[in-house]
Amino acid sequence: MRIRAVRPAELPLLQDIERAAGLCFADIGMPEIAADEPPALDELGRHQEAGLAWVATDEADAPVAYLIADRVDGALHVEQVSVHPAHARRGIGRSLLDHLADRARAEGATALTLTTFAEVPWNAPYYARCGFAPLADSALTPGLREIRAHEAALGLDRWPRLCMRRAL
Image (cartoon, rainbow, N blue to C red; front, side):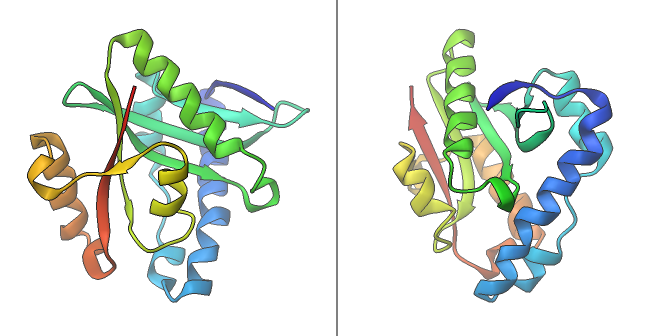
């Protein structure tokens, strides 16, 4: 597996990975999440142009997973990390997170942050195994509060959500 920057022509492939990865939410009673459309091409392109989009590739250099990030309040914020189910449970997501951590350190950031579903096994419990810790609402930065408000407006708070932080 190799991690590299996303190429513009690969942006539709990221959407395909996201759709495939999202299907497992239907199995745990979250069909709305399973049916949710992936980020639009212009949004993915914004991350790619900012240098904040990476793919993990197979031996043929085809993307099998991706991570996009933003800069939020001095940290790099994981906007999305998705692994195609055919390549899951091989450490690819963790490798992408570690790659982002290296990038964050190089930029002088002191943490990675993310928001996630608290009770989905491959969400908060997984991120905890990757070194992320839950943040109390009182510890949220202005940017994280804004992200959570946007998520709430989208209806994601129907299921318990939380912010997490990984110190670097």
